[in-house]
Length: 344
Image (tube, rainbow, N blue to C red; front, side, top):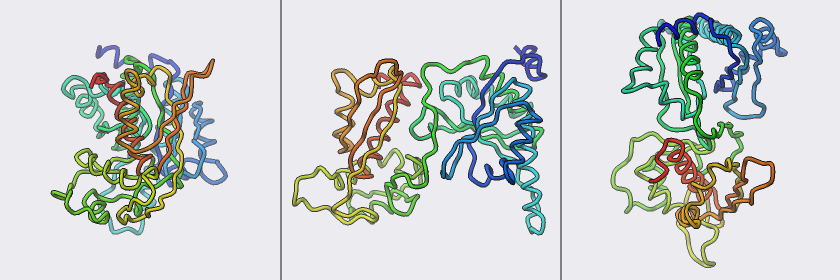
């Protein structure tokens, strides 16, 4: 195993790979450069294909494809560019400790187990042998079956780390269908006004003090680029969704809620789900999809299978709270199916 690892990391195995990176707008701007000169130079010198996702999203996906040596060269150039940016930002700055270069990879969740290893042995080995910090996110990225893997350290440590991660990805290909993460535009439906709101703030502003036991300092879950409520408060999110469902009987009053009034407008959101995963959303005789409809208060329609297409269109209609809860529940089903807990 180790001999094989060494051979691969030294470039002995040259196969074509695709690695996806998640970057903020500022990082993307740095990679593109003036009139696209920086990315052009990176493409020419590394020999890798470097594509940057379109759109006015706060986050963008940078896809790097090519033989392993071309990928490592491209990563090296990106890491060095980010280090240059850090050095430039420290000029005239009072900060004395230099922050590390940080990259975020997007990896199919089914490969993350191999990357972590039994009892965390593999990730520990990678950290110790490269000197880089590596963290695998516990939750999947919204509307996907992928996780973020954050690498930070010196450019050299990052390159060594990426080489070892590539070895793991080559040895353990993804299992089943992967739903890729697609960053949402900044104009995506916002479920709660004001961006990231903790559960206790939301409930207090909903005028629903009785259901609030203790403030939850737990981190918020991201849904569609915005923020929702942590696990323990899903029941409370459910209550809020019910209060703001546009499908309530006429004349029923709803409590005040920031960013949503009693006449909350309905909107629709579309998802595409691979055919081989749609069964876990529908459930036996439609049991799961009906459960999601009831819990979220949203209307959910699944289009019939189209000949030649490997995906099904799912349309969710309702208030922003309804849609967000329905998406959360659908993601939870997909997540448990991909990680082998589908029976739950």
